[in-house]
Length: 270
Image (cartoon, rainbow, N blue to C red; front, side, top):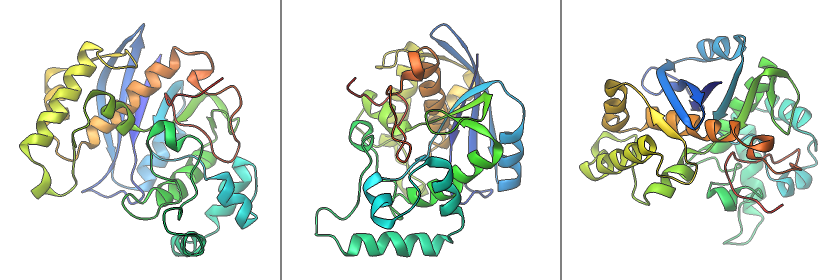
């Protein structure tokens, strides 16, 4: 099976492109053969529109908190919600979310999705550190426009299936140490050692998902040397997609909230 993992950014550019890992799954062995970088929307959209088949995990939130959406009176189904958000500018989205937070007490500013706790992820309405709200804003609309199937949320092309991924969840299962930074001054030997530990665990399959990574030595070295860990995060998303490919319902809950979605490989109770 063809597997992809996508490290996403809401502002792709040459210095910070969208990174896509491409691989093949054979049993529990994931062979990653190449990574591609998309430094602009046109390139990324063109790739997304290419024929499948593939199963991919994308590193951005696919949905918003139901509490938030109901409070705002926005659509309660995924496609209409995404279409509505696409009509808003980034500034309008931020101001709307900020007004919601400003009206709430300290310690409970953000509305969380049900998946945030199990995944250990930031609330998808957060617009800074990290700006995942902008990632939702830019990413979800492009999945919808490309006509892919967003599993559990939107039926599209059955040959192109997108899952929400979160590489940090898999990395933390190996080490709690910080493994990346976009700031060169913070790309320390300690963070490099953490990446080396993560890559070693992936190659040996010593992590909760049990997928074993195989790649060329040069690629493995790049996964360790890249201080931003964009390439490693793309591979971690591919590992999540590979795990999902081996599970009933891609490892997702039997019923998914059509507003919130769910993160691939995040635990849940039946």
